[in-house]
Amino acid sequence: MSSFIIAANAVVPFMIYILFGMIIRRASLVDGPFLTKLNKLLFKAFFPLLMFRNITGIEGETNFSLKMVLFAVLGMLLLIGLLMIVIPRIEPEDSRRGVIIQAIFRGNYALFSIPLTTSLFGAEGTALSSLMMLVSIPMYNIMAVVVLSVFGGGKVSPGKILKDIATNPLIDGVLAGLLFRLTGLHLPAAVSSPIAALAACTTPMALCVLGARMQLSSVRGNRKTILLVLALKLAAVPALVTVCAVALGFRGLPWFILFVYFGAPTAVSSVSMAENMGGDGELAGELVVASTLASIFSIFLWIVAASALGIM
View 1 (cartoon, one colour):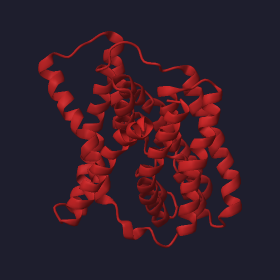
View 2 (cartoon, rainbow, N blue to C red):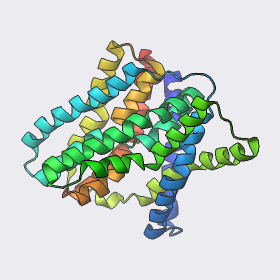
View 3 (spheres, rainbow, N blue to C red):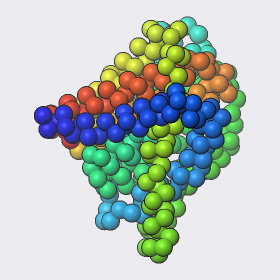
């Protein structure tokens, strides 16, 4: 029962935020253009404040080890390499191959990691999940471009990739937080309090926007492909990662960070990248919707299982 309660406390808020977003969209309180602008505002203004607050607000040291970074980087490269061998044997069309591979490895870590780790592990989880942005954002973006270039025929220069990563607002927020933390600088309460209040709005608003932008009717024409991706993304890959991580001594918060890094639902940004690089944009959108909805239940079950097995 305790495992069930732990999982429910972590996942139920997600369900409520997403459901609320779906309700306000259905009630015509918001429309597509407004949601697009609000999503852009969250990404460029609110998320950097959240990253900054997460890094500067933690007291003491975080369990951010080189071993965990190496596992995340090497594990992701091995996963992508394996997918680039297996998926072409299953899917005949290049425009769909890159989209499927991207959907499996590229997770919505930025949106899902912080509220989950905060709910389960408190302030230390918040800080560590924020620091992992320095790993997840470059890895997801660089490897997405590589995969889509191989299968979609898109042309993106290495300079543009580096520029996009360097100017990513989330990365900028993390780096600013690290600068303050490493130099010992502190903001006065009159400044830090409003920053904390604005940061606290970020996750609920982002999840509401995600729910409002979901179109359940779009998940229709690619059922077999969607089921394959869901089975790999939310079950097989997290299972393999868990076995390897536990064998290497990762438990508790470090394990959970790695689990979310590999097992979070497909990132919303994968749709625009697929469309701009010759991929099947419709399939990419369907995979985002399906994986997001299914992940609410898969994450719940993973937390229950990990708690019962003593991994968390």
